[in-house]
Amino acid sequence: MIRNPTPRLVSLITSSILSVIIGLVAFLATGYNFIDTLIIFGVTNVVSFFFIFYALEFFIYRKIKLIYKTIHSLKTQRYSSVNSLFKKFDWDSDPISEVNQEVITWAKDKKEEIDHLKKLADFRKEFIGNVSHELKTPIFNIQGYIHTLIDGALEDPEVNIRFLKKASRSADRLCDLVEDLISISQLEAGELKMEYERFDINALVRDVYEQLEYRSKERGIELTIKEGCNVPFFVYADKYRIRQVIVNLVVNSIKYGNEGGTTTAAYYDMDENILIEVTDNGDGITQEHLPRLFERFYRVDKSRSRDAGGTGLGLAIVKHIIEAHKQTINVRSKTGVGTTFAFTLTKAQ
Figure 1 (spheres, rainbow, N blue to C red):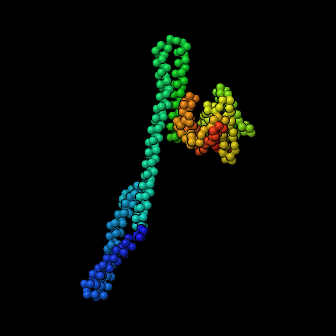
Figure 2: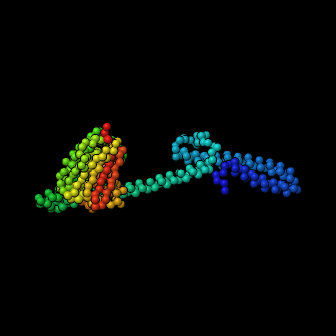
Figure 3: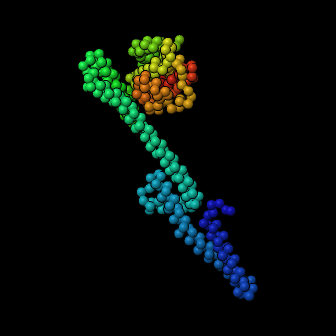
């Protein structure tokens, strides 16, 4: 079988078959006159060839070519009218194979687009469900505390202070969640402009350590700098946003690290970049959870995560901040050994 036959080849084959049939009929009709039959065969072949070729080229192939070009124009938006399609197309090309390829490509693109839209729809449903759940918890807590106070606990000084403090913590958690939602939506929309400056990342980490010293001592966790790294490492980045990254990573190491353990920061000169690592010696994270760790509201241990506080958006915000700097962040972990978060920043000149 001939693949992708041209109009000329189709016309030649069809006219030859037709001429042979007519020639045989003429041969029998003329009493086996070979000369007359040969003339009839030749004339029939030439006339039928041009007629069939014209019909294919001008009535069928050109329609197919126009359809092909219309499909192509819908993808590229290069043409403004059908007339321009007709004039600009290369009529000597093979339209059948081109239409076939275009339809296959178009169908593949549409399938990928549909799959992507389905994933977005699933993601939207999951996100709305997560937001609803995260908002519901502190709101219901506040509502419960207030109702308890209204029902009589307000008269007991010890009880009302305790419940007011609980309501205050739930309100703070609600505010943190709303602020994180605003931050992540702005980061994803590219609305937050990075304010780049030259600063010492080691000095910033030490400042964060000092800020979180009380919290780390509550769990007996020592905040340290790796030996040989306690020297200036200058980077070019948004200091406020990178501080947000460091705080999040160190707070996570304090929350989920083992009591009496350590959190260690380290820096490595990578020529054009500085690699920053934050390591704890906690229980570690199993490999199945690592690919989804930076997703919004994803929690490895849901009950423990909520007891420890946090909004479930911290690592997602961290990832967006690092990517806004056109850098990368990754995590490696081993159960029973600990977890290391590593990210790069542009080295300051």
